[in-house]
Each structure stands twice: as C-alpha cells, then as structure tokens.
Length: 319
Image (cartoon, rainbow, N blue to C red; front, side, top):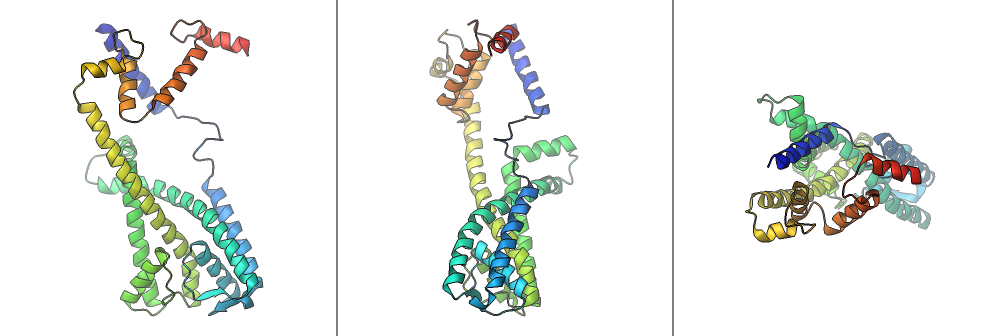
C-alpha cells in the first residue's frame, strides 16, 4: 500500500511539473509556426496582386464604378469570400479567366489566412470573456487561465458568437445610414453577405460603403465559418466529456482488471490502470500504446524493464 501511495504521489508531482513547464516542439510540427504577421503578409500580397490585375482590366468589368483602386480591391474581396453580389462582374474572357483563378486561390489561401487571424483574435479575447462571466467572483489569474483551458472550446464558441452579433449590428447600422436602406433591408443584406448567398438585389454601391465592405466582409464571412467549426468542436467536446465522466465513475469489474493487466502478472500497476482508462476514454489507441512500448524497448538497452541514466549513456555512446 505504501508503495502504491508513493507511486501516486510521484505521478501527481510529475504531472504538476509538466503543467508548469512549457512543451517545446520542433518547428516543423509547431501549431504556431505560421504567425499572424506572416498571415497578414500573405493576405496583403494576394489583395495587392488582385488589385493590380483587376485595375488594369477595369474596362472589362461590368457594374457601377466608384474608384478604380477601391473597386478592384472590393472585387477581390467579394471574389475571395464568394459573396458575389452581382453588382460588379467580369464581362470578357480575360476577366472571367482571372476571376476563376482568383476565386480558387482566394478561397484556399484567403480562407486559411483569415481563419488563422480569427483564431488569434479569439484566443486574445478568450481570457477577457472568462473575466466578464466571472466578474463578480474572486478569480485569480491562475484560476482564470485554468477555467479558460478547461472550457476552451465553449469560450471560443461564445466569443466568436458575440463577435458575429456585434459585426452584424454594425453592418446593419452602416447599411441603413450610409447606403440608405431600411433596417430590415440592411439586416437582410447583412445575412445574405455573411452566408455568401449574394442574391445581388442589395449590396454596397457607394464609395464609402465599398471601403467599409472590404474589411467588414472579410471579417464577418470568416467569423461565421469559424462559428460553425467551433459549434462542431463544442458538440464533440461535450460528448467527449460525457464519455470521460462515464469512464471515471463506472464500477470496476474483474474483466476490467484482466484487460488492464498488460504484462499478465495478475497485478495492475498505477501505470497500467492509467493507460487502460486513457484508452477507454478514447484519448489513446492500441496503436499509440504499441508505438510507445516499442520505443521504450528500444531505449531499454539492458532489458531491465526500466529506463536509467546508464541506458541513455549507452545509446549516446553508440550514436
């Protein structure tokens, strides 16, 4: 019993150490490899190239014109986001060919770049959202970070939902005041835009409206896409948490002990129990465990069943 308690204490202590220490991964697998700065450069390069191309063939694009450069950027944005109002469009084969190229590259490149930017913004606002919810509670910095991490998907979803409601409100008010639409028509235009329906009966037709639309359309269309991504993640996360609770709270049976006994010594160690429960939760698979076990065997050069400093020294001397 004392040995088991010591093992549990050691595992808990080691777990706390890993919570404090940051994990460093090779740059090739780092999730933050592409920074917001790089994303901004990619998007700016795409819009700049598109603006130059479409400004040179401005006379081959139909629709109401306001400003040569502004209309070219506006055309790039509604092409990239597939908003496609129909208020401006290509009318020659050259213009149509360029539009086809830019719509595919824009949806792939722009969608990726803007989703990265949206993730960055949501990540920054997530802590503020947690603070706002628990503003009447005495939450310290560590508790706020822990709460945000525990319910990360939920707070991401509600943060992006709040942002979309704000953007839709701003868009409705702008269309009503600048484009002289009624509140209902303005809201209708906002819904048609962010869902990329683009019926074309209502759109941004003034110079100020198109300048606003360049930024507003980019942000809102991507935010809505991210909302649905987070909605699926939220549903999946809730299902996963329900499974975890069921696994942790259900009664252990003799069959469970037999399955958890990986080395068939009729005794289940703390490590075997943890692996069994993680596998039951779906956090690791049999293939994952087999790979880790094989890696352990390769490191255990003296075949003692444990890893020591001597094992590492032998491996280093052989390399």
